[in-house]
Image (cartoon, rainbow, N blue to C red; front, side, top):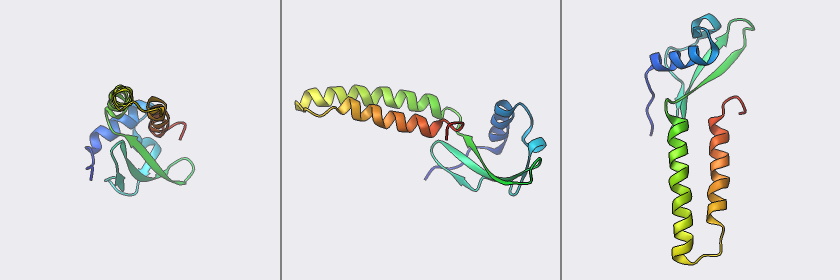
Length: 111
């Protein structure tokens, strides 16, 4: 289980990404996140302009750079393991497919 990161950091990220303080745009229904995972956490809020209830996802600091390092290591290992075991499978291609999915999850605009 992955814990949350501090709300102050999350609010700083929101301000950096949206160019305004979060409380100017949203009314938070709870001061704490309603969920957290390895790549981020989620707040439940009301968008002030529209009145819509939204799930506000905030990416964990360093998630993107950590994933890039992890993918580099995974690709190197896949290449070595394929050679070591003399496999015909495209392990690097499989790792690349996984990486595409992972980076898609990290792209909150695309998601």
